[in-house]
Image (cartoon, rainbow, N blue to C red; front, side, top):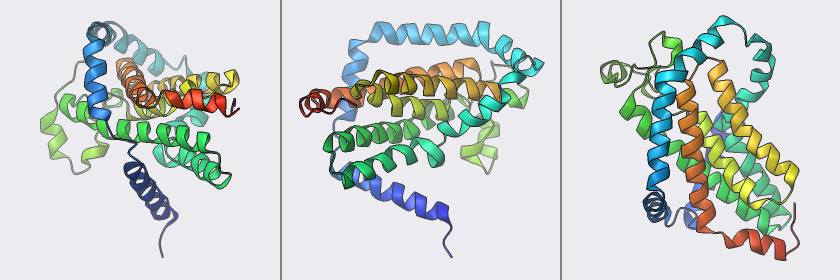
Length: 250
């Protein structure tokens, strides 16, 4: 008998086919190149800040977590951590809202949640590139924050995609951020926008708190996830305007 998780991934697959057929991924590469060319100064700043975090912040933050002085946040972290997971929130949430919007014939919501899901899908795939290339050790391995390029250990493991040496950038953070950026961009409710701003920040805190990532890992995830989310917003900026014209101010 099929397990529920198999049904879930089947839904993801068919929804992905829908996104491809509706051309939600069309022009993503050209948009990315254009945005990078227009923001080379910001790209340099991102690299510089990441290096500062690696050399000056990662170890103190990891030591703070290990010291137990943040144990008060353990219950909070338990609630936040699932919000960065694809099977519990990042993909399930936008697909569920999309289906509800489709049944209610709410095309504005259909489009923005399909856009958010498409951004999260792309982020989930692209994050594997820096993870594998950098092959950075996670804090839980006991290595220093400078333990990069552990390819010998990485390729020796059978659980390649679940390796302790795939730390930068945080996959949970990058996908949650890519998901939330279009929602913040399109939705008009200040309360909802505030929630979707806090969500990836909460996931970033949780990933550091459970000792799964360095501070620089989640910072990179936030920045790259924002970049990917903005690409999808820039592909269809008129959607927000059309939503207002149709009176959809949620």
